[in-house]
Image (cartoon, rainbow, N blue to C red; front, top):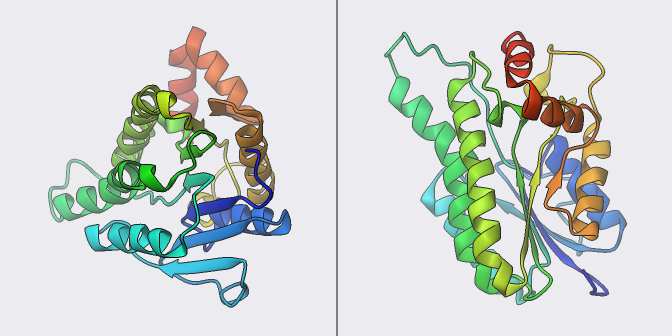
Length: 240
């Protein structure tokens, strides 16, 4: 990016990595459009941050974000698809299974795909960046979270296709693969978690350096190990 004051769109912005991304970019002088189900009252009235309260698992929620982006009149420099949900789903129990599957796929995979396609006309060309936040379980699924794992694998694959299609427009597509980060989603699991602030910093740095993938800390080691010994990674993540 070579602009004096970039405009950043962050989804899932009210907590965890998304909240840290909003704070990081505001601190560094950016204008931020923050989309979330819940608005952060601490920054809601900031002239540098437009909060969009929306549910991205619905078509109406995605359309609301697209509409707000158009109304700002600002070209987007960075779009970060961070919103996501993880459910423990027992595939042997069919009761209520379809609504659970649809909700998780809609937020984790459909929303980033729909928003990416719809926002292309608003993204700076050349120089714009789209970031898709995936997960290590995109490579080795977590048995207790099968739909989350599948949706993140789909998002990782989608990122590659999107990168190929948008390259002629000068838009870079980054896949961010966090290690275990200390968020509500990971409460009670694992040790030595990365802070949301550190992950936000890694994403921002990867964007500024033009990376195709951001995998800080243990993520980089796990991805490297997965190329040579995928069975080992699967066994480790199976018990996580």
